[in-house]
Image 1 (tube, helix red, strand yellow):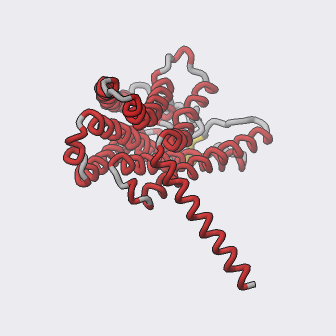
Image 2 (spheres, one colour):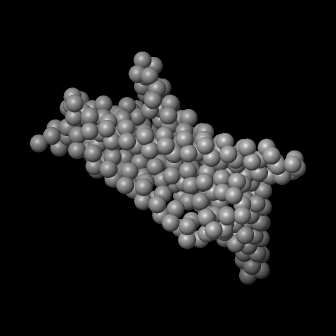
Image 3 (spheres, one colour):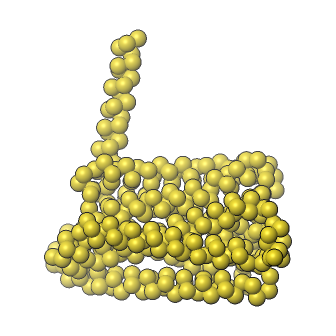
Length: 321
């Protein structure tokens, strides 16, 4: 029987030593989570309620917002709880659930970013075939494939990681349960199977990354040949938000997992974990809403209607009084 069977809980990394700093971290996590919930919630509501936004691009954007909400809700609440109550504990089952859901939402997010890149490629490079290649059934199939790939990725990694023999204690070097931190606790050579699975995942991610690079090279070649400046600006405005989100997501995650061991320190690992797990879900709604005129118009309309309904409600109550 593996030594991991005797572990009932893990110890997460303490974010601060003093009570004042712990409360400060709680407030920061609370602000970040509220910003992510508000931003992604507004995008989901705007796309769901705005009939003119029922297009493939906004359909995939809605799914991307769902993955951002899922990933932020997987990691931040436990960190807030630990900071507020001055504890480091997370149960064995809770850690397994956190690993599964975080891997599920992160893998699904990357899959949707790849699909959204294909959407931009078809829209700009093959506009006459857009309705055929990205019909409602094709979009539904691609979304289902993205969610299914994320689920399979999470299931394989979670089952493989928690079948390892752990003989290096139960203290993790992160503010949430991450697969690399758990592998560090495993016995000698017992982690080779998980490293092999990680290598397969890295290869698939690299293949998707190459596909996105190739797609954007083709997109920029077509855009630069557009004669009117207004046409080029419109084409770039639909691509830049996605390109910014992809760059932010890939750069932070890659540096977090591929950085040289010589520069690895607990504080750097913690900063990188925060950077790739918390920052992108909070900034993605802002990035998309700043550059997309249709989305900004839908958000303004939705907020105007909501404020109008609130004013009517207050007036009705005042009249009854």
